[in-house]
Image (cartoon, rainbow, N blue to C red; front, side):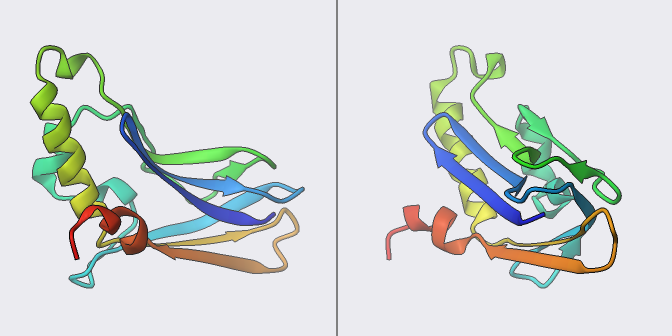
Length: 139
């Protein structure tokens, strides 16, 4: 397996996922989320502020990772936000939620630890989100 952290920041979709770009199954050991305050969480959604998590109606998120496998060419969505029915007749809420989500994501670093089916080697991939989600801020 070859693990890759995928992030997307579009007008109508923001997501964080783990992809298996290899040829064998990828078995997750753990996924750690770290923020600028040096807090570490085992569930990606828990690294976000409680106010934001409660306010947004998420399209998809996953909270349990250990032991999960990702087939070659597949992805495990950790978090997906898209405008949905909860934003009906509230276009300003879309922009506010998108801005607030980007603002919190920019301070996160994600570390994924995984193994192959033979469990002989543990692999690790990590990504700091600041360059991607922080690019909207004026320098």
